[in-house]
Amino acid sequence: QVRLVESGGRLVQAGGSLRLSCAASERTFDNYFMGWFRQAPGKEREFVAAINWSGTIPTEADSLKDRFTISRDPTKNTVYLQMNNLKPEDTAVYYCAARLSSHLSRSAQEYAYWGQGTQVTVSS
Image 1 (cartoon, one colour):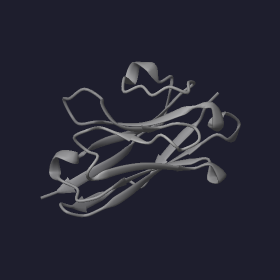
Image 2 (cartoon, rainbow, N blue to C red):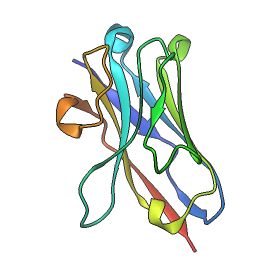
Image 3 (cartoon, rainbow, N blue to C red):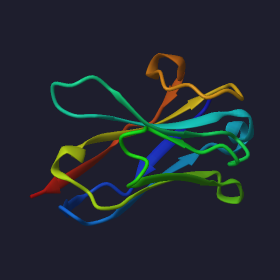
Image 4 (tube, helix red, strand yellow):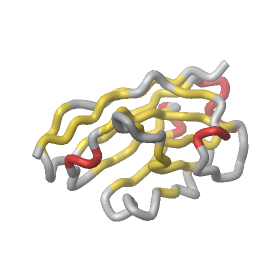
């Protein structure tokens, strides 16, 4: 069973930066496509970024790629989401997810494993 634990969310002012981390269980990390999603109150869960197991194919949502960057450190079984120039509309719960596949998916329905989420709040 894949276990994912997110951390790094907090209250930050607009224009600030945050780095979210997602620690994955060691046994299953290498064969999974890892993703970040976010969900704001009253809205559907939204794709943010994803990365393949080797870290060679990072993909960010088109609307976020100029500010958000996904990466992973296989030696630490951890995936990161660097978020710069944060805006109030980035306020949401951010979730880490894992998908047993070598192919990218932007659909939350195709990710079988999820962390508990970490709250990011951006004040204006």
